[in-house]
Length: 187
Image 1: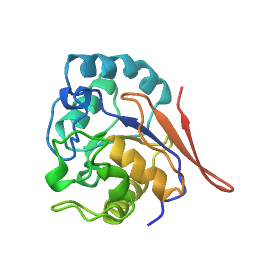
Image 2: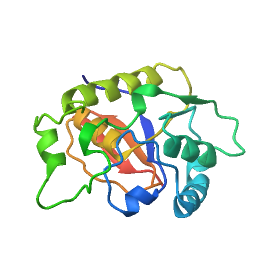
Image 3: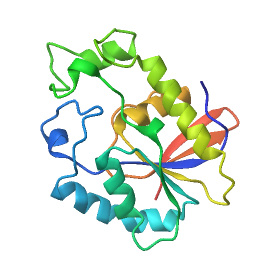
Image 4: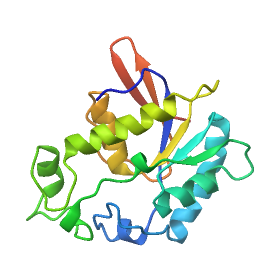
């Protein structure tokens, strides 16, 4: 499934303890740590300068916290969107992500079945459908999506781009171009 050809902003949630431990978080509901809260507070001025028309966020607590922190003092509508949740990786959640003996993330993107997990294709389609629904809102300014690194990876794939890990609380702008899509840091 492709994306509606409308621009939008994206920001990954702030850091969690599981991120520090390099654990596969997935849909496990982990809160921001103190540094993650500080990251979101630090990103708030940049987000304010973007002036999003609306903020949509994953209902997982780390994204919800980030959305409310970066939107503090604004009048933008905030809406939880279940389709923006991080991928469910089944029995791999909680395991070390970059285990040299089990590179399951790249294998999963290539079609590997993981017990209890979404397939990459179904995850990408779920995320694209959720963002397309966000883009239906008729606002003058592009919306901000507050979600997860896997959601960013799925969106990049829906744009036929190959992007992997992104930093916490760094805003990006997705823009349609005449040849496809552009993803650039929004500053």
